[in-house]
Amino acid sequence: MSENRGLFTLDAAQAYLAAEPEMAVEKLSDRLYTISDGQVRTIFLEGDSSVIAFDTFGTPGRARAYGKAVAAAVPGKAIGTIIYSHDHLDHAGFAADLAADAEVIADELCAKVIKLRSTQGQTQPTRVLVGERHELNIDGVDLVLLNPGPTHGSGNLAAYFLEEKTFFSSDTILASAKYGFMPDYHFANFVKYMRGFLELDWDRFIPGRFEVCDRASFERGVNFIEAVMTACQHAFVNFVPIWAYEPMKGFCIEQLGESFGDLEGFEGHVGQMAIRIVHHYLMGGWGLEDTPEPSVLLADEIRL
Ligand SMILES: [Zn+2]
Image (cartoon, rainbow, N blue to C red; front, side):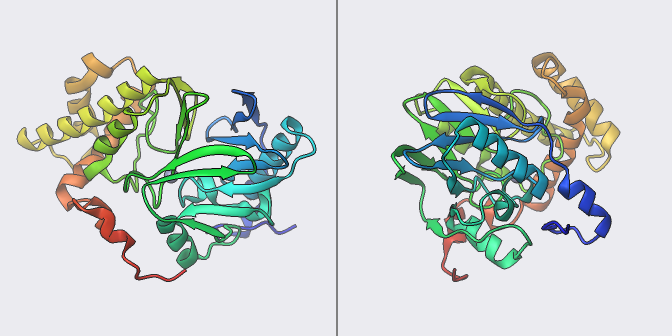
């Protein structure tokens, strides 16, 4: 069998693409569930007659395992809606293998990237959201989707559930230091937008990876990223060779170890984080996403 292959070109990738891992499902309320393959995490909701699934996981096999886990948790209701948290293939690359006929909802920018990328297995969104805040009712489920501006990836939609006092934001904050390599993070406004989410009333945070955590852990995760950004600027001031891994790792451990050394993965990841973040200051950011007014990204230059 030939799997949808994302961007892989090697036939040898088929074994990776086909593998179906164990999925761990946790029911958080009458309608809200979270699911993880041990690394990536997302959520799904039970509607009146269907399931609303966020994301797809990152291979066809994982998408199928997700679908089977949803069917076991909510028997008799098919996935009618998929919401992409952002464009990245490791989260949202395989709707074709999860539920080929589902309505697919995504932010405008996410939809544009997906259209132009045309990756095998990543279904084009059928319903595009434009703007910062959306209050939706999908099959009897009320939910709020938020995109304050570029945070990670393209068109990142966070989800807020007032009833459960729960907040979901993929690939942004963790309760640990385990993001390390941070491509496609838009640091110019990242901390500001994350702190904005703290203005909402919630006490449970569901990240795009690893474990569910509380509000205090989210806040500390934001503080940690801000502290690494500060330490990276100090590295320039101190003429640390900012392009070299070992000196940057050592400098950051020295600067941040006392305050954040207890975070899981700190010593193993802070050096990689720093190498990425110094390039924010060296290069000026990722592109339009890291300008003071990134809403220019939504100028209508690509038609859907
Ligand atoms: Zn991502």
